[in-house]
Image (cartoon, protein in one colour):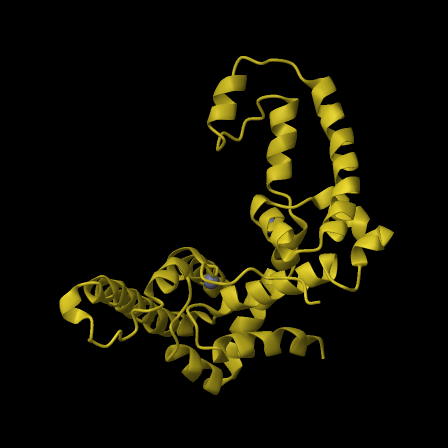
Length: 254
Ligand SMILES: [Zn+2]
Ligand SMILES: [Zn+2]
């Protein structure tokens, strides 16, 4: 039964026939979590939920999505106790703060893993923490593994994938990371031989689509067919970085 929890969303995502099934799943989880945290079920009034959101906080992208979602009172409740928690943590970091020789350098180079000082260390940790992002990453491993189980067992699933548009590059990179451990060695080459050409040809198609989009702005082409160029920008953006740039704002259901 537990298996179905993962199989069904993967099937739905592949059947949707879009740029990337894992982006599709990610969006579904994100919207479910927004509804859960901020929606009409008012989970934000439950202390165990708020304890989690207080600690985890939210990333910049999800703060924006929560703001746009449209539940001001719910957002304010979540924010109030998250602020309180944050102030307590901030005060601890402020008290431990000492200027260090490499302090400024490490702040400018955010990639520098050396903890420059107590404040930088704490803020960097917070930057990586988000209740909604974690809701996806907590299940991501299981989704990836189930994806490979389905690929192994289900020839219809394999056929649908091999005639799909492939994946976005970030999710494709994760798939290749998993493939090494989740596909029997003798089948690995066949996997690579299916998906690398698929990715190559989809990238070329998208290049063609965005090129044609530019041509369509030439008055001589004003009556020509759009072909697949109308969605070319958002499709290219998704293919390169994942996500859905053209999605409307996700709002609270009234
Ligand atoms: Zn993706
Ligand atoms: Zn996030």
